[in-house]
Every structure is written in structure tokens, then in C-alpha cells.
Length: 346
Image (tube, rainbow, N blue to C red; front, top):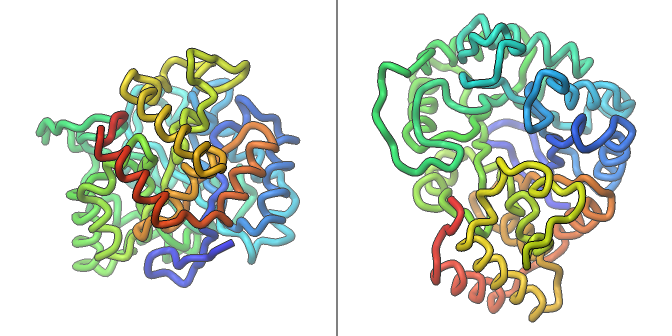
């Protein structure tokens, strides 16, 4: 397992990060602990969650994922070897069960969210605290076009950074990151942090996979020049890149079988591209899952690749991808497929 610096902090994280958003919905507490134990034994020291997990979010399961992690025995016994990341939600139609529905990235909300996460995780300090999505109206979650709506800006970036600085000084958070953020938002956070000597964003958690390489267009340069690497989520496009949904298949218990809201990666263009990547993997005698994951992990702007699984055999294969080095020939073939229809599922 490779270990990489988290931004300009003194924290080093494994090149693979274990994502947890199925725990509490598709996975029980015992299964969550089994995954944590196995990933830790394989060298993963980085675990990512969020206050609103599991996904899809709903009142009945809200915060169960953090609770499952908080009850994992090794989190206490091996605390100095574990890097734990969580997130605070931004505004949206999440219902009144999260802070009475009046959610913004302001002092009141962030302070309460941090305290609640610390309680559920049974910790004194969070290693990486991320803003799950922007407070302002902008283009994220697959929206490419930008419509300027300054009347919906919400809490200012300055206000958000002020409370993050307060949390760091109080010893409750070590470092901070962005998620579902844009180039302008990232640079504005970095600019204000530099001017005011506030905490600097160490990472950006955005989607990135073979079907959606939009991050490369502008954000990859920001990541490398500003030393704020990508924590890539959905590296297998919700499992679509494994090929298991091809030919109209709907495996029992799989995410895209259970919930139509995740269908962005099964559009006709997405299916056509997936068929090409699956055929390429077969040609080189590797699994489609390992091809997809190894590609993401190998990108120079990626700090860590967030894998996720509902079954242990999936998790083992995902972690095995860390040992796969893609040849120049294979990378070239991937680029040919990409250029034939760039970003079919942005």
C-alpha cells in the first residue's frame, strides 16, 4: 500500500480509502466492523464517512454510519494509526431531521455538526473535516452548466473559514477539506485562508472515474499547483464499471438495482463506454473493477481513491487493485476509448 501526504499537513493517508456510505442501509454494524478490520489489516489507514450517511439519506438511518464506526474497537486501540474523515452537510432538501432543516455552513450548524459527529464517533478529534457540498448555488452533483444566483449564496466562505479556524484552535479538528467543489470555490477558500491565516484546505472530494473525468478539465491543475489533492469518490461509477449491469442485468441487492436515483452511470452512452472498458480489461486479462480502480489511483492529482463494497469479496478485489500497475499500452488504450466519447456520464 502506498501512503501519500494529505495536502500540506503532516498526515499521510493510504492511496486507497475505505468509503462507508452503505453502512446502516445495505450493511449491518457487524459487516461494517468486518470491512474495517480487513481493510486495516491490508494497510488502509484512511476511512471516510459523513454525518448524513448512509445514502440514500433518510430520517430512519441518519448518522448510523458514524455510529457503526464509533463502536469499532480498533478506532480507540489503534487511534494513532487511523485517519478518519467525516463531513458536514450543506443546504438542501434533506428534511427537518437534520438541525430542523435550516442547514448552512455557518457557525451554528458547523459547531453542532462537529459536536454530534464527535459524540457518535466516540472521539475527541476528527482528522479531516470536509464540507460535503457548497452553501452557495453552483454546479455540482453532475450539473455542468452554471447559473449565477448570488441571492442563494448562503453563508460566506469567510464565515465558514472563521468557524473552522475556531475548531482547529480548540483541538477538535486537525485538517479540513472540500467536497463537490468547483475551481472558483476551491481557489476562493485558499485565497481567504492565506490572507487571514485560517486553515488551508488539504483535499477535494469530487467524483472521478472512467465514465466521468470532468475533474481533469480544470480541477486537476488546481489540485497539483495548490497541493490539495483529489479524494476520488465513485471510482467505479456506483459499480457500473464492473460490468455487472450490462445486458440489462439487475443483480439482487446492488445499488443500481435498489435505487433509480443512481442511474446516471447507466445511460446509453455510459453503457456503451462501459462495454468498451470491460472488453479492454478482458483483453489484458484483468478484472474490469481492478482496471477502473487502478486507473484512478494512478492519476498524479489523486491523493486517495475512495473504494466501497457491500460484500467482502468485492472489498478484497478492490484492495488488490492497489498492487496493479497499468502498462503504457493499457493507458493508451484507455485514452482511445475516452477520446471516442469523453465523459459520457458527467
